[in-house]
Image 1 (tube, rainbow, N blue to C red):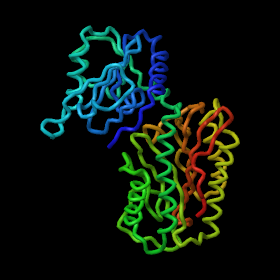
Image 2 (image 1 turned 60 degrees about the horizontal axis):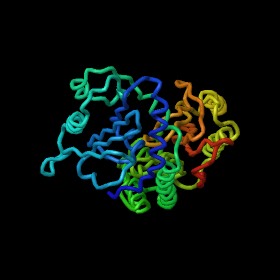
Image 3 (image 1 turned 90 degrees about the vertical axis):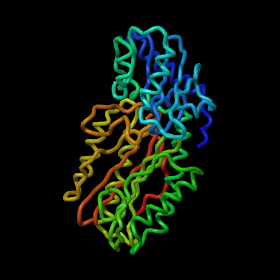
Image 4 (image 1 turned 120 degrees about the vertical axis):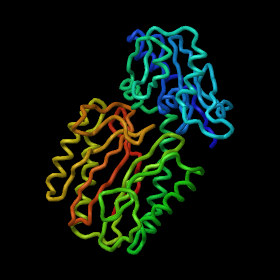
Length: 367
């Protein structure tokens, strides 16, 4: 897969923001070992099962270690090193160890205190370095929330595939179609739109169900088909949802539930701005939707999207996040009940701006 044009300036800006944030921790360097973090800082998209490493020093020097086959690509780094990810075309099982050997051979002076991501920090480094460590998982996750223009460009490209998939779904969803055939057709649409295989494909492809993988099942008139779609474009994700009435003749109850769900977007567009509590917005939306019992809304209202399908901020009562400028959010109200056969979920994407929110998924919402 060809590497996208890396925005060197944007990556360097993220490197500087990271160092400015961790410098008060008194560390000598930052060791990034999550693929997403490495891409965020350097522009290097490395797919599983390969395990890159990036080291950011106090003077701004960025070292990147990744599979040798990617050494010809351009990244926002000062030093680029390769490791043997394959032996005679066979993928090695010890990817972390392989990249770590190269790192340890390059670092001649053991750092006294390093910032690292505990969730992906392997024992290979612990065995080699008797040094103090500071966990920066939450710091990196928080910094990744603010999307730069190069990140938004990749996410908009992913969303173009989603838009095309929904257009095709409205053409082919009808009584008698098999869920697996819908899924297969939408995969093909995503590939054709992106011009290459997506790096992720999900999530929900079921009729008369709250969600899940497609089944070998023929859909029936009167059912609602929830499509919660997401693709990955070179590491960055999309995530939005639409619900389609299988026979294109929604019942009065289904139309009422649809109106209740879409009314939540008016609340979001009226209230969300930087500094507002995500938990507060969840509770206000939850109160609106609970007026329609026995229909049920019992999941989060939304989340951030980026290098992961779900990241901060969390529009969820279990977190106490606040919205921040640069957040790319997915808002997904829903109502579910057997009377609705079996429910509605609609998901819109917004960018949190200085003035409020900008709608990024302005496509038809109707049943």
